[in-house]
Image 1 (cartoon, rainbow, N blue to C red):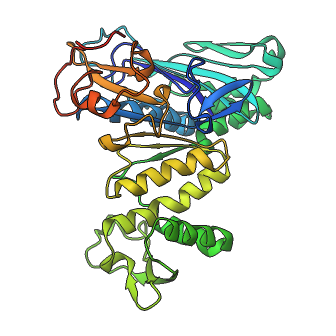
Image 2 (image 1 turned 180 degrees about the vertical axis):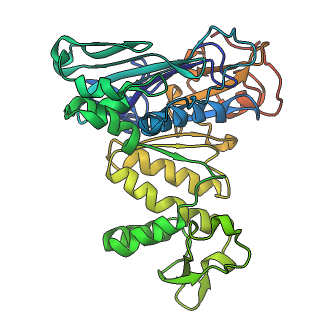
Amino acid sequence: MLLEYTCSNYKSIKDKVVFSLLSDKNDHSHSENVVPCSNKEILRSSIIYGANGSGKTNFLDSIGFMAALVSQSIHKQPGEIIPQFPHKLSEPTVPTVFKVQFVRHGIRYSYGFSILDNLIDGEYLYYFPKKRRVKIFERDGMRIIPGNRYKKAFDVSLGVLKENRLFLSCAANYTNLSEIEEAFLFFIQDIVIYNKDINNWTEYSINLMKKNKAIKQRFIELLQQFGTGIKNISSKTEKVKIDAEPIPNELKGILPSEVNRITVKIDYGSFQTDLSSEESDGIQKLFELLCPIIDILANDKVLLCDELENSLHESLVYQIIQMFHQEGSQAQLIFSTHDTSLLSTDIFRRDQIWFTQLTKERATDLYSLIEFKNLGELENIEKGYIAGKYGAIPFLNTPAVNQFSER
């Protein structure tokens, strides 16, 4: 489970922002939205609001960037730089910093790194067996300072370390330390990023249902629960040859000569439809999302999604949220949205609701509704947000000044 994430100097994020999934001890509402984990109370979901251009996407993208760099760092070649996206007003000597605390298999970890001049500037990894912090390693430039337990554990890993490689990635590939592997696998297996402009999980979902009848049955049950009227689905996969004529000579022999063509038929009982040509964007989106969500819930992963409501009816978004709140797993959902109908204390606790807005420096400020004092128990959060009561004005891409409540 993700406990806390911190980022600074990345795209529109200039100064440090802190995003926490630790529950507020003074908020006793919606106990079903909280799960005990590693002696802490952790939120199952968080929702992020803000105007277009205020940094919601950049914030979620920063987590994806961190996970991707951990995953791919070992493959960096000599002389290859690390992409860095500092805030336009940051000084050149200010690094980009990422920090995260998480729990995997009951053990808490703390990991972070900084990038300066497109190279790794610093890095650290701690874990907390028996509730006490143990240093696994710290890094300053190319200097690695191992913890007392690990003085001789990193000899081989040090041999493959480079300025453009994270030491966690090196050590995960060149040691057999379980604590290193667990930390590495959190980024590889447990963080799932969904981006509507990049991801298309339809083929993955169909293949998953073919391999696992239980997942298919659960998928159909959910479609029926969502009121789609769908009784069954069937699919056919066939190899289709690619016409070689349009392919440039330099790419022939590199690109595949054939691809999979998947045909999906949806059975409504009295008639059938073709998924790709006859179904709505909403049904197609459900085919993309639901099977991965079933897997995420079953394996306690963290799903990050920018604009979850895209192509989905608000009632379906609500039901997906309820799956994370009610399924009994330790899976988490973190998503941005413009759908103000979800902005309700009937669905979320106040510590689950977050906002982004731009400061006068055109920098992203990220803050939680729990920071606002003197809010009545029956206050209409949606109405207050639309009125600009919490900043993060939803319809204006301008810096907002909160005039109504104290933070």
